[in-house]
Amino acid sequence: MKYLYLIFSGLKRKKLRTGLTILSIMVAFILFGYLTAIRQAFDAGVEVAGADRLIVRHKVSLIQLLPQNYETKIERIDGVDNATHSTWFGGIYQEPRNFFAQMAIVPEELFDMFPEYVVSDEHKAAWLETRSGVLVGRGLVERFGWKLGDRIPINATIWGKKDGGRTWEFDLVAIYEGIEKGTDTSQFFFRYDFFDETRAGGTGQVGWYSVRVSDPDKATEVAAAIDAEFANSAQETKSEAEGAFVQGFANQIGNIGFIIMSIMSAVFFTILLVAGNTMAYTVRERTNELAVLKAIGFTDRGVLGLILSESMALTFVGGAMGLGLAWLLVSMGDPTGGSFPVFYLPTRQLFVGFVLIVAMAFVAGIIPALQAKKLQIADALRR
Amino acid sequence: MTEFLMNHMMVKVRGVDKIFKRGSEVIHVLGGLDLSIPKGEFLALMGPSGSGKSTLLNLIGGLDRPSEGTLEIGGKRIDRLSERKLAAWRARHVGLVFQFYNLMPVLSAQKNVELPLLLTKLSRAERKKRAAIALDIVGLSHRAGHYPRQLSGGEQQRTGIARAIVTDPTLLLCDEPTGDLDRKSGDEILDLLQALNKEQGKTIIMVTHDIHAAARASRTLYLNKGQLSTEAVD
Picture (cartoon, each protein chain N blue to C red):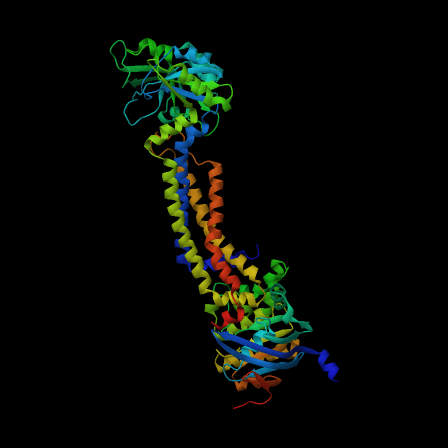
C-alpha cells in the first residue's frame, strides 16, 4: 500500500500517453463486454437447453410439419419419459420489426416439459380456462408494455383462419418468469386446441416435438430409436439434442462465437502492443531513476514488482472503466429491439474480464520489468 | 595504535581490482587497490576523468562488485553479500549524493526524501516526520511540497542530501555533489556536508574535480590509473 503513490507517480509522468493508453484499454474492454453480451445472446438457448431433452423435427426441414399422432408413438419408445409438440406461428404484431417467437403448444404439457418457465398457479388456471388465452414471458410484456387482460392482435403470415381472416386475437391471461437470468422470457405461447380449430389448413399437424428422455446419457440411442420408428414413413424425422438443435439454429447466420472471438483477439492483441509499448517507454525513460531506486536499497525483485504493478495499475484503470461502461451499455438493453431476448453481461464473464486485465498487465509489463530487474546500478547511473 | 586504528576503520579496501570488458577489450580501472578510511573522516577523492574515482565510490557503496579483492565497510564484508542482502545493507548504511541530484521529477521534495524510508517498517506518519527532520537539517522545510522542477540546483542538491541522510546512515558517498552548481550554491552544499561530518559524525567520501571543494575535506587522496596517492600526479 505504501508503494501506491510511487506506482501511480510513474504513470503520471507522461499524462497524455498514459491517458491515451488507458483510453485504448478501456475501448478494448467495452468491446469485450458488449461482444460477450452479444455472444451470450446467441448462446443463451444452447446454455439453458435441457440436457435430457431432444427435438424431433421433419427430416427434410423444420418448416415441414409432422402428424400430431406421433406424440403417442414417441412416448411408447423405450427411454422416453414424455413428449409435447410446438408449432411455429410466425405472425406480426403491429409491424414486422416487432419480431418475437409465437408458438402453439399444449399448456399442461408445456409446464411438465419446460420447468424453466415459472408461472403462478393463478395464471396457469386462468390460461387453462381461456381458449384464446396466451402465456407471455416477462421480457416481452415489458417490451410492449402489455398487462393482464390485454387483447393482443397478431397478423398471420402462415396460418390463415377458417373464416378467411388473418388477424388472430389473443387474451393475455398469464405471464411467466425465467427460472434464471439466462432464460428466454420473450416468448408468446398460445393453446394448440384453439389454434388447431381456428386455422384454415394443416389440421392435426404440428411443427416439432420436444421429448424428455429418462437417461440423458442414452439420449443418442433414444434419438436413433425415434428416427427408426418413423423411417420409411411419409414424414420421416430427425432427432437431436435440444442444445445441438438451438446451436444449429444460431449457426444459420454463421459461427457467431468464432467471429466474436476473432474480433476480440485482434483487438486485445493490438491493445497489448499499445500497453506493452507504453510500459517499455516508461522503463526506458526512467533508467536513471530506477538505478537510483536500486542504489538506495530497492532490490531487483522490488523494482520488477514496481514495474509490474505500474502495468497492473495502467491496465486495471482502463480495463475496469471499460468493463463498467460495457455493463452500463448492456444494461440499457437489447440493441436490436427484440432479436436478443436474452441480453446481459453474466457475472462470470465480468470475472473473465478481470482475469484478462491481470493477464494483459502481466504480458505488457513483464519484459520491461525484467529489463528493469537486470539493470546494473553503476552502468545505469553512468548513462 | 595500529590495532586501535584498524578497529575504528569505516572502510577497508584490500587488493581491489576492477576490470571492465568492452567487447574484446579488457580495461583495468583499479588494480590491487588498498584504502583505509577511519570513522568520521571527510575524504576527498580527486583525479582525472577515467581514473576510477566513481568506480571506487560505487564499490565502497555496494553499487558494483570488485573483480578481485575485499571490501569491508563498517566491519562487514560487502563483497560477499547476495544481491538482496547488499540492497538491504545499502538501504541501512549508505547515503548517496549524486552530481545531477537524481530526484524523482513527479514527487515532491518531501516524497523524494521519504523514498528510502519506504523500505523500512516505519508508519506513514513516522516516515513523514523523519523526512521533515531531514529537510529541516538541510534548511528546506519551507520547500517540502515543491517539485524538483520548482527548486533551484542548490535546493535540489540539498533535497538529495536530505534523502541521503534520512535513514541516518553512517557513510555518505558524494559523487561530485557541487559539479552542477554555481560557486555560491556549491559552497552551501559543502558547508552542509562539513556540518554533517563534524556535528553528526558522518563518514563522508566525496569525489570531486574541484580543488576548492576538496579543501573542505579533512584528507584528500588522488587516484590515477587505478592507483591511489596522497599527491596529485600530473
